[in-house]
Image (cartoon, rainbow, N blue to C red; front, side):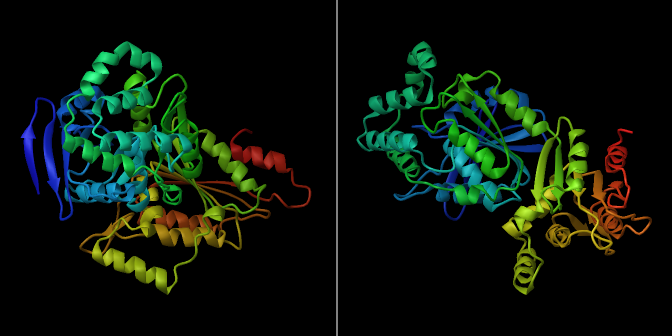
Length: 454
């Protein structure tokens, strides 16, 4: 249920669920969905909707943007997990799926939880000036803001807020305009702000963050006085994502850096190449060959699933029953579908697997059990024929063998059949180096020939 107020560039509405009411603004007319989750603010963001639409002008033709505020009536003890749960309910109510998400500061914390818990909602995730846990600096900042808000000391709160989020030079240059924009918060606004600010005390979502499966870009600032830049690097490392630090900017880098949105737009536009790495040995020749293939994917976001590290187990009765129950109930956002969503959204696929026992390592078979998912990677037509739901049009299978494989390459044949029949991928190619362990073999020459260098 929603009620709506039109503005010149943005339409402001409130989405009501059984548990909450969240205001949001909608602008743009593109087919892709862009969800913007902001940080803390002493007042509602909705009066700023037109300004935010203007700031994000470059996205308006390709994307429809949903700019979410916070829940209207948070209760004491409200947590970042509650923030995420309310936002998920709002996204479900608005039928938002496969979204490009930008989460800023507290919004970045919420976005990480959403991406981890509901992989169906988030196609790509960019976060800025945020963290996966409380830091010693953020603890001090949010404790001060919470206390000032509870005391209803608006002038001191606004000054502390501005000095912490902006660089000193930016604050001094635009001090009057910044403080003017923060003025006017009511006692009700401050009570609401205090609840949200206190939710950021003691939070730790590292375990959830590490399970994020979508492509991730973490943007940070070298002069961030709230979380610091190390928190950005930590998120990128733990999620196998990418990081970029704007060295000379502060926490509000999204307002200060002129090329901030260029980074976000470029990341959203990048094709994704998914590398499914089924190699086992640390010095795997198959992996070396795959790395040469991946070097040719210039301009792509390379995302790797390392099956040795993932330790994916074959489906047993318990996991199969859970998956089937989720499918029957339409709960395709369950984490058991995360590999499937990752595969379905990739633009290109590279699979590296050594030639073992006429096939490939068992981990790759277990992986495909998690990827062959009705409603995620394929569907059935009324006549019972599989129809692809995957985005990729090209799959490259990379392998090496100590002996000669010849025509009996059952591993590649199996992957090719899956790709064509279920995933709708017609361009399926094989790159191989074989005979590597035959006495007298010129291993370097064989590998270079496979590389395409000879």
